[in-house]
Amino acid sequence: MRVYTLGYMGWRPTELLEVAERLNATIIDVRLMPRSRWSPDYNAKSLKTALGDRYVWLEGFGNLNYKGGPIVLKDFAGALKTLSEMSLRGPRVILMCGCKDVNVCHRKIVAERLAKLWHCPIEHLERPERKTPDSDQLGLF
View (tube, rainbow, N blue to C red):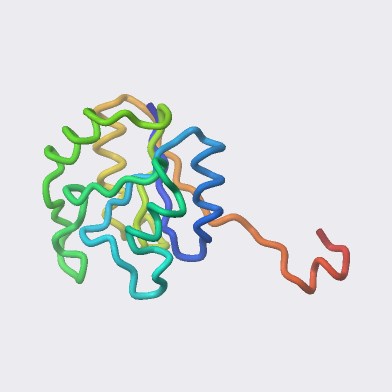
């Protein structure tokens, strides 16, 4: 197993699918509630449509104090049990939340616990750089 994390801010759903396929991974949504204030593209139903069986929401990995306060995972043991019983698309998981900075996000704690249990590395994925229309026209990329 291998654990990756990403904060979806700035990512397009198509980019999420591309990275999941490239890494042979399943995206595990670790938000307490799989809804987005910023875009309906990041609500669970939209993500399931866009990502298919590469997307799974595990509420137990969610932070009960997502609005502030110390991080408290809802039910790590229950989510871990569900995850271990699933047939994943590959030997890797991408823990996804909306937070851009992994250092202030609960997904880092989930990743560290999984990595310790699975004796595997963690990699925090950054949003891919995109070409801008102006740079395309100038031949910069």
